[in-house]
Amino acid sequence: MSKLGFFLAAIVLAGCASNKYPPAPVLAASGDYNYIIGPGDSLNIIVWRNPELSLTVPVRPDGKVSTPLVDELVAQGKNSTEVAREIEQLLGKFVRDPVVTVIVTAFVGPYSEQIRVVGEAARPQFLPYKQKMTLLDVMIAVGGLTDFADGNGASILRTAEGGKQYSVRLRDLIKRGDISHNVEMKPGDILVIPQSWF
Image (cartoon, rainbow, N blue to C red; front, top):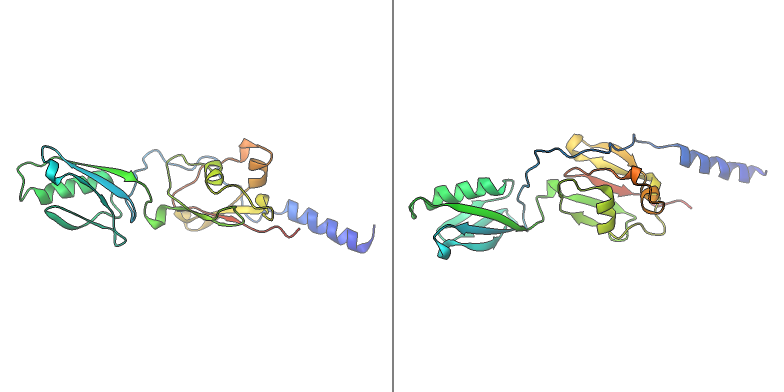
């Protein structure tokens, strides 16, 4: 074998053998997850026995909503129950014993909880986090890998754990159907898919 051939073989073996990060844990989601409202969400606000006060409103980029009799209510960073109780408290000045239900109807979530996919995905983007969301769900949403992706060199940057990074084997998961590499995502995860050198 020539020196060049030996050198290339050594690079290939080193690339296959070295994972800079530990493998991602299979289970990551916690059972007590509550959806947190973020800019871009739509809220269906229902005030019982007061249809004129019931409506669907978008959460503005500043994280606030406005409804009849309630101006500039901060919804970002709260769950739907917390927003409903605040609206009840504010409407109590005008309506006798208001009963309010808030339902999130369009999901974006706060930036801190979105899943981001960067690098060699077919459609790099951010995705709203959903409980029990897996790596396979994310890859289906972004359309898989590009032809130039180093799928088995990908990693998850887990912001919920202070920026800890885990290796994931996307090529094995997608191209070979090896479901043992399908791991759960956490809110705020960043999936980094590097480009292959050859």
